[in-house]
Length: 605
Image 1 (cartoon, rainbow, N blue to C red):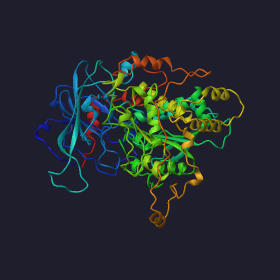
Image 2: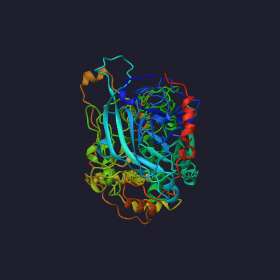
Image 3: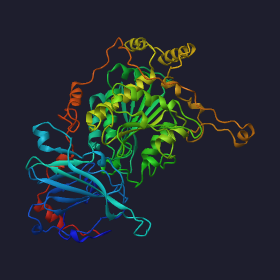
Image 4: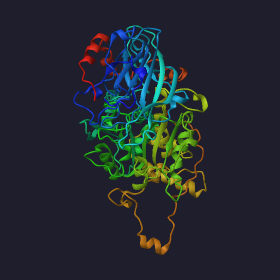
């Protein structure tokens, strides 16, 4: 057993849980030995007066490697690193049972890697009580007291030998939970989980099975032999070869589940009967990959897939045999006239919702400012989006946003980041984001795309009327002529419509869709500084007048969720199934049975 530090105060500690099957799959095992902060003995009932809690994490997206009882109501928890690595421990999701009501239990997650966390500024874990869900229709809620995040003395494993003084240490997240019910099973997680089961359930909904609106296919097969789904959303009833493509991806990092909740909000809007959704389907083809890392999500990884590396650092030169989802997604994008790309993420150290865009090294990209500005002024988006937190500098050349923006020449290439915690301004200041908020962010993203496609100042009434008929009208030509007329009238605040910001596919060059480059000799001779992108003035978006066709109203359930304190998700939505983990968690072994299983488990080396 690897023991970076063995302290004398662990003499009474006893092992009460040891996971051996990531995601409940006995056929999967890490190629790298697990690293434990300290050594611990096997269960001894005589050491503690209180029966130990029972734990489990061998289910979809679960992550808990070991639980150690260090006092009657106090436990050290050790997370499983991402498969085939010894690092990236941050995401946690496990079940706990055999609790006594109104007893305070303290948990210490002792092998976290990040030096900073939103747990230092008010973030709480989320819990899901089976009894509360069954009897009171209460789903995931934020809970926990005495939450703190700090460095501990346990040394992180290092691939290269270092002096003891230079070796990094782990960090500890400590929190206290009180369970109100006896004979209850409670799920505990870093943030609202979104598992592969949730993903498949959502894709099976009737709205996402309508062939006139959306068609599902398989982008590729992952290293874990899972299907990576690709959705194509457009108006299949009207053929138009001019439609540019909007690409949306999410969940390349498995430990950022809010990205999937936002993506759910986007998808539900795009396939709806809302006039703006119909408009977008007529103007664009949407290529959506809701889960870029199915393996990582299934096995409870935080950042990597089964290749043992961060897939969002492989876009520069992905290998199909090692990074199949990234290679396939990039290959598809290189053959399409992509006009907009957004990769959705979660952020564990910053509050608010914000975006990253791409400036060039010598010039500002004014086009990249348009969408974040519109989103931050949207009637929903203004509650979440901080324009001041948006950044357009390029630091990592191999991420999706940068490769798509710079190598493929797509000016509207973004990363959207949503905080694990909440906002630090406005009506949501000092409150947690809940599931309704994340889905609202997705709705705002979709509606802002419609506003970008037909900017403020253009008459949408005519377009909405055309959408109600079967007559084929060239919407792109109408929008272009309207925009050109605005320029002719010296309307400097006019926003260039989204589809006009694209480059013609034939102008792209090279195997990775790079922009044409002048030879070094020609550059030296002419000494011409590359011209900046066309200037686009951006003004604060105004509330558009109501069209002749009424916009779809938000469901009343979502409105009511805003009135509930964000510390509680409120009543469980009938459209969201209970976590699949409950089927496994409800059958947690009793302490006696679990002790027997632990005694027959071989000692880790």
